Image 1 (cartoon, rainbow, N blue to C red):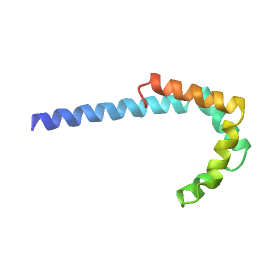
Image 2: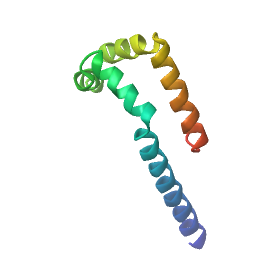
Image 3: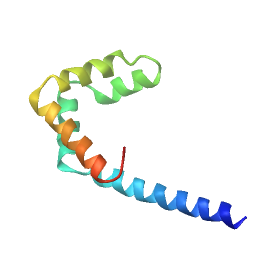
Image 4: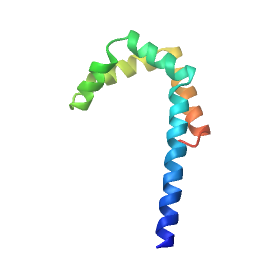
Amino acid sequence: MQRDQDFQTAAASHMVKNRDAIRQLAQSGEARRLVSLLQQNGSVESAAQAAANGRPQELMSMLQNLLATQEGAQLVQNIERQAKQSGLE
């Protein structure tokens, strides 16, 4: 019983830590610029909705176009590095 409670407490602590790390990452300058670039290239919301409905092509196309740019690729690399440093993988 105590072992289960300890596991649940550790899991909850890890989830809170991850949530905080994700929040900080999402509020970073790199993440904001990435969202701005995506919004310039089309409607992110409609592309995400289409993907959620089983049609990911529009969203994938937006991401591919973004990653084809030097700035977009660098932003994604920076965000990935920050995620790893925060313990998110």
